Amino acid sequence: MWLGLSLIFPRLVDGLSPTTLFRIYVPACLIFCLGIYDDLRGASPYLKFAVQAIAAVMLFAGGMRVLNLPLILGPHSLPWFVGLPLTVLWVVAVTNAFNLIDGLDGLAAGSALFSTIVFFVVALVNHSWLLSLMSVTLAGAILGFLRFNFNPATIFLGDSGSLFIGFMLSALALAGAEKAPTFVAVAIPVVSFGLPILETLLSILRRVISGHPIFTADREHIHHKLLQMGFSHRQVVIVLYAVSAVFAMLSLFLLWPTGSTLGLVLAVVGSGIWLGVQHLNYLEFGELRRVAQRTIDQRQIVINNLSVRRAVEELKVAGDFNQVRGVLVAAFKSNDFDGFELHLKSLPGDQAMPGETDRPFQWSKFPHMVAISSQPSWKLTLDLVTTKNRQRGSLVVYRAYRHRDLQLDVNILTSEFPPTLADALDRVLTMPEVFVPAEQGDIPSLAANL
Image (cartoon, rainbow, N blue to C red; front, side, top):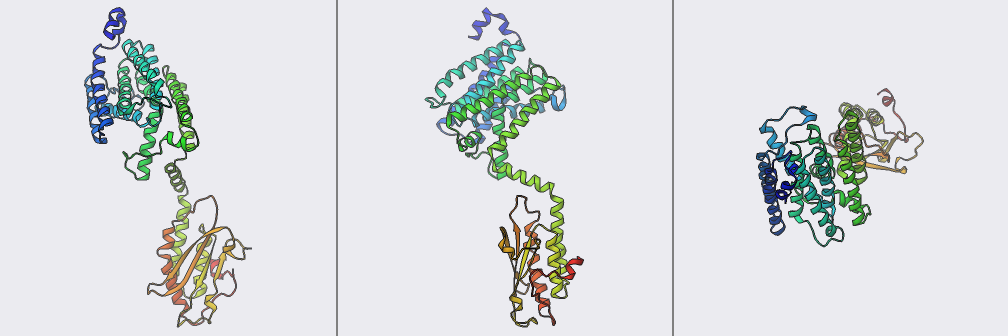
């Protein structure tokens, strides 16, 4: 068809060599055959990547390649040993991105349609007639297919269709880079593929954060999250069509790149992605936010950790019960817990009065609290067992429910601290003239000096 039209409209051969069609067609057929094999027999991820890399190398050999990275290296052209892996990465990423979003009827084809229209417009603006013809032909094929692929679908893309469409779009982007200005050639394809690229990046990040294999399938994709939020199948597809349309429109703004245009596009894209990911409620990114907040609060965490470590050292040299009690009060005054109860257990040989050690010593940051356990709180019970395996009671620490995270590494409190406290109690309770507190909330003078 193209050969016939080129005889009538000679301008179709301007801008791109006629052999470009065949340079794209041959590797595209290879990808299509890979998709058919995957649909019928099932192909491993490594086989898919290997075949896609071969097809990408064929494009590179045909002159369709990543020429430069203007935002990083400026206008300088890349040497072949840098351009080749970048070309392979681009082709493999885009090809699999459209395969990844093919989870609902009509979603992948509809998203690809918006990207194809962008390439058609860009090709017309840059007078790339062959590329415009190829783009509009692919758009027509997708539109005709989408009529029967929209929910409820009667035909389906399968891997053969989604991989083929993704590869064709990656190839058209590379072919257009030969004629378009440097920045336009790089930025417009990236923005126009916004939805599939975002889905791919989110999937990789989620699986890396959660420790799952990257190639493992799950039901945490964007369309799955929208379904979980109560949207119907058609509503999800329409919402994601709108997202694809916004990305396509923003990419067209970059046809005339200026500082203000680029800033506006980046601001809108960045803000939209941030808000969208927030509303999707991915647990993995919530955990990243928690880690980031913990990093910001690291100074307070260090202070709280040091209070426990300092208490461990002071307990090792405490000479009587008053000192042990003072060390505990001083330690918990300066960390994120709100109170504690010290339950002592009498053992033969103790010098305390019978029954006195069974009465718990309580302390709280809230002066009018009658009982710590009467407030809405969570507690952590530490069994006090000496290094000689003697049970000396327990220490129950309390913290009121609140939105702020606990600014303390709990394993510091649960490892060395309990046996050190138990050894200190075992030592002072067997000494003569042991003073055991009889009244709740009595603050020893040592605590005030610490």
